[in-house]
Image (cartoon, rainbow, N blue to C red; front, side, top):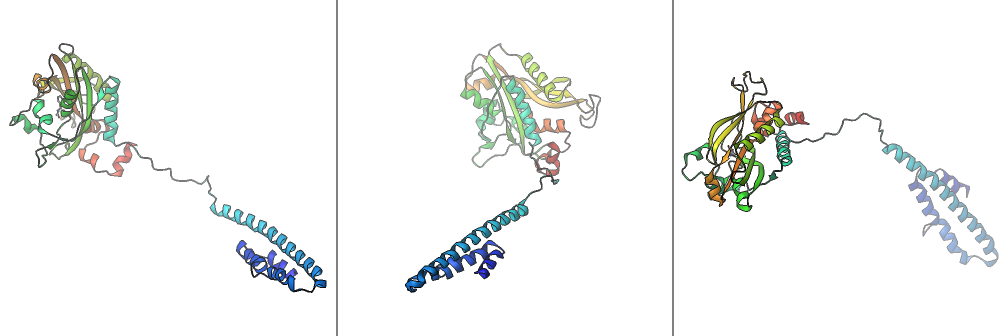
Length: 330
Ligand code: PHE
């Protein structure tokens, strides 16, 4: 009996202890078979034999339970030691993502106009001739279509060359008054330092009862907007041409790099062109069935704004997905 108790007490782990338990109490275990033998034993010896057997069974069971408790607690302690984490240990901080500079700039622009009560509208990237050109006073074979190098699909649909078709869609969908912006991607066959085949614009359109909006309103909101984006800059409206506005103006800000003295970025002019705008041409209202209204519209390139705000020299770098560039915008 002592020999078995020694074996129990020197068991190195729970597996070994379990093996001993099975040897004793399993189906073919020593103690189990002794109990089975009980029925063959002469009645006069039976009592003593059974008493002895009960003592053995109880002793072994108690020893096993005791040892089991010890081994289990050792096992847990060892496991905790193995799996513990030293939280005081220095670790690299987790890598956080960030908005792409183009999106960051776009959200900043959207935020301004939403605060001025503009709704945010959208339209499809694949457009048709009517919405992208025709309704915007750009009839077929009009030379001004050459201003925008268009990607055409086989079925004569096209990738929208600007966000202006959303003006048309919104006017067809709603009654005046309208006060909307339309942010989104646009596509042109172009690729150099300052052009990529896909880029982003934010369009703006305000339509009111005839006589309720004028060029003065356009001038005011764009001046305020540009100072919100670029700080204390001078703003200049320069006569220009767009088929869908009349009169049309391009809007310049005093160069944010040289303060207007002339530098490489502004090509020594002291001015940076940032927007197209104008009073909505009556032909556009005719195309969407609007009468007795007046309005203004504007459109801007988001990448151009991002490049100026972050002094990014090559537009293409914004679309290469180089992590070294993107990490600078966290
Ligand atoms: N759609 C013009 C462009 O892409 C921008 C513009 C919009 C100009 C609205 C005037 C009014 O160049």
